[in-house]
Image (tube, rainbow, N blue to C red; front, side, top):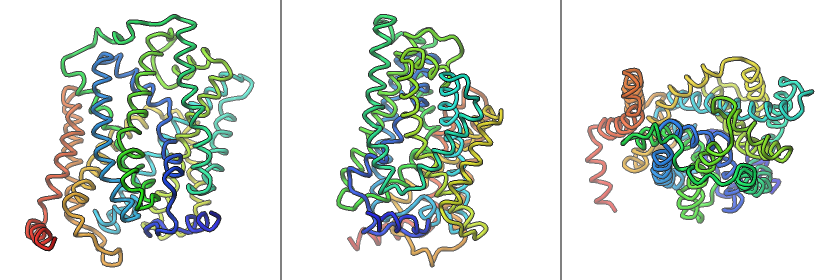
Length: 442
């Protein structure tokens, strides 16, 4: 395994993962399932239930499980087959220079999430041990998060997250069981937010989850480590619907129940839920929060590092090692954790979400209909007009819809997604001839 770690640390972001550097199915599952545990998913479920009604929220979750599962099934198979990172695949879609925008959006989004999840741990530490100032708790969180990703996905993060997975599951169960013991069983938890229930509230809930389609990019950068013989397993189970059943539905339902049963002293947020859990479970609540947030942050820091490295390598030809970029990510995260800019980060994430949805649409269209256009990197141009044009126009349309008014917001992501696919497929005039020729050859 030592030679695999060395191979990965030397692996260029623009080189496919070779077959001898791939991971076993169980190891990759343990590494990837770190992404399913975050207070963020618990809060989303509860927030949507309060805004649109619990039943609408659950329908939105189920639809998201299905859509995420289907799309990531396709993407993971392709990533495993080609061994590509998001950076390398984006070169095929947008050209060698055009791909830089994808890596910029990816690493900045991963940093934003690292800030949120890290802040939750820091607040939890400060709340449990008031003598530890928030800034020192935040520094502690950043330092150990950076140290964790010094190792490789193959030899460390899979084992680390595999060990913590049972504690995450037990923590979820404990939170529900203890809340029932303290407050009694809330038989009407499915009525949470019933006063806000609307006929099409499920659509708003479903499209809200499209705002975190960055998980499709997460999938790509993890799936490339999968062995080709395990492709069916990964596409159906590891990166498919079972994963999102836990990530969205289980976490979301737990969130709905906890919020309906635990009295809230302030507006619902990740922090308010964390403080409620700590109040309920005491020091074990802090441990549960640490487990959930540390697991998700191994992915946030790792992907932010790899894509920041790819971005500056491509734009400025900076060939610094992974160690330098992981420390750089840590510095940026710490500065943001101490800054009062969370409202701006949320706004940035909303706009970047449109870019991400467009990327997913183009990526899916390429894999399903245009993968026979794939070229070796040395033959790629700096800019790929079909990909860039599709991305630009679909994103502009999505942003315009977002700003038409609240009643149109729920259509921004779906329209962006469909528009990106339609434009990308139809831009090249010889597309249908190429497809016909390909079919005849087969």
